[in-house]
Image (cartoon, rainbow, N blue to C red; front, side, top):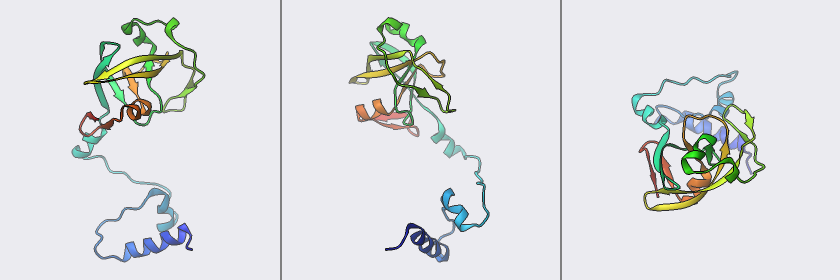
Length: 167
């Protein structure tokens, strides 16, 4: 049985010899094997068409019967986040939160202890689901963040390209 590296070497040799390929895709972790002493990557600025894929998916939906805009759908987040400042809009206070032992980290790696968790009814279109939110004291550029817990629980397919959520 061939090792993974031997399989990659055979595939790479076939790939480079094939005259039908005008451009080649080489994964960054394989570049050092293809081009000796290569230790950096070069990325072009995105074209206008590519920029359409870079927009965050922001929705307007109903939470606890209140219309909420700037709801960020983020498939990279494992949890749903509710900034503490939003509790008032739903008629809730810190006393309504349940204790939670989760520690959250932001994209920069900074960790913080959330205030607690709360269950709220989230409605989008005709679909309604009780959703658990981790309440954080941090300020954010969004009113609510819906992560994989909500996406998978709803059976949703978020599309940043189409700026829609499909069910």
